[in-house]
Image (cartoon, rainbow, N blue to C red):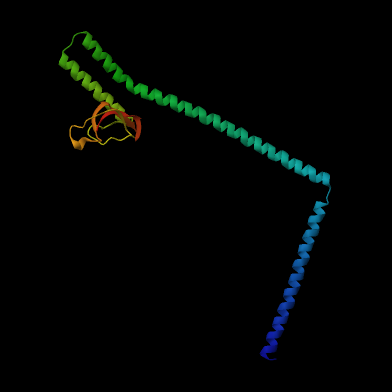
Length: 194
C-alpha cells in the first residue's frame, strides 16, 4: 500500500470513529434529558413537599444567623460600654495623686507657709500633671510665632503686626490648645497679626 492510501484509510477510520463518538454523545445527552423529564414527571406532591422542606430548612438557618448576629451585637455594645467606663475610671484614678498634691498645697497656704516653698510645690504639681497628660498622649499646641492655621488655631482677634514678618502669624496665645494622638482636643485661642 502506498503512503497516500494508508493516510486516506487512517483519515476514514478517524472520521468513522468521530462519528461513533458523536452518536454516543448525542445518545448520552438524550438519555440525560429523558432522565430529567422522568424526574420532572415524578409525583408533584412529593416535589412540593421537598421544596417546602428545603424552604423550612433555609428559614431555620436564617433565624439562627439572625439570632447569632443579635447576640454578637449585644455583646459588642456591652464590651464597648465597659471599655468607655473603664477608660474613664483609669484616667480618674491616675489624676487622684494630683488632687492629693493640690489639697496639701491648699493646706500649706491656709497654715501660712513660706511663699517660696508654696511656689515650688505648685510648680511640682504642675509638672506632675503635665507628665500625666503626656502619658495619655496629650500635648500642647505651640502657637506663638507660628503661622496661623485654622486646623489648630481659633482667632479671637487681629492686631496690627509689630513688624511685617509677623503678618498672618500668631502674635499671642490667650488660651493654650491641646492635641491627643494628632487630633485637636481643644483649639488654641490666639491673636493674629494683620
